[in-house]
Length: 365
Image 1 (cartoon, rainbow, N blue to C red):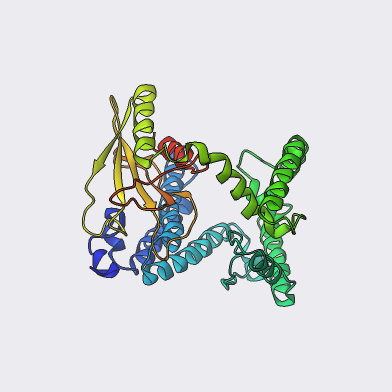
Image 2 (image 1 turned 45 degrees about the vertical axis):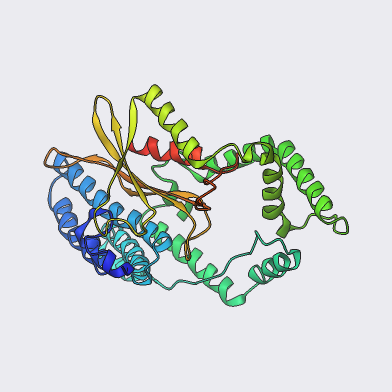
């Protein structure tokens, strides 16, 4: 079955996402109506509820699009998701722009141009490949520097127009960090606290490089990711063969059951609900409160899948206007070797299955 035909019922069971065009339809159909409602009503409970609906409407699409443009194999869906991300960003800026006086709105414009760049090949065992990729990737490019200058200037202009001292103040407003000054103090404190540990890590990487290539003893900037991985892999060798993915999952299930009263129930996804046959859908169920949400487990490597371990929020939990609860949905994406007939998928202490799974569960509990 082709990826396009497999989407007949819609990703994650959402009918609008049975085709790439569904992103556009779902992203923007109710936004203007909600904005008009919020602006036409006096401040009060209705306004708060309207903004909650608006945030949910935009975030559901933006979060989903962030995942699809990375994790889905179908190019048409990836392109549609990329376009949806751009349009959602444009809509958000237009919403904020509505608060500006009419006579200065013409001063602000949005440029949706983007730049596609490659990677650093940081995991290559060939030092020359790492060095060449690093130097080419980071070589000064006047046109890109000009774009960066324009981006920073536009961000500053945007922040000033909506009443902020800088874009950093705008981005941090409403967050735990609060201000750029607090962020800078935190980074300085973190640097001071981690300096000794960082020096030890660099010594370990330098020793590993000497062990693997005695003629090359100096640790270079393009060596850090590769040799830090080599050090972690060497440390994990004694226990590598004893921890399988299945054993890890069984341990997690036992922990969550005993500590939180939460169980994971395997559910059969509908046709078109998942993007690959090896995806597993887990319902997170509390022994007293019932269904809490869903986790889609995308664990195994496949062509065109990024080699990174991460999680995506597809939909947040909230109490809807009709009194029903919208259950959260998340995706846990790993890049593990698939099992064979004779060998299960093996984990190492560096594999983030435990931490990532706990993070996803906390988002739906």
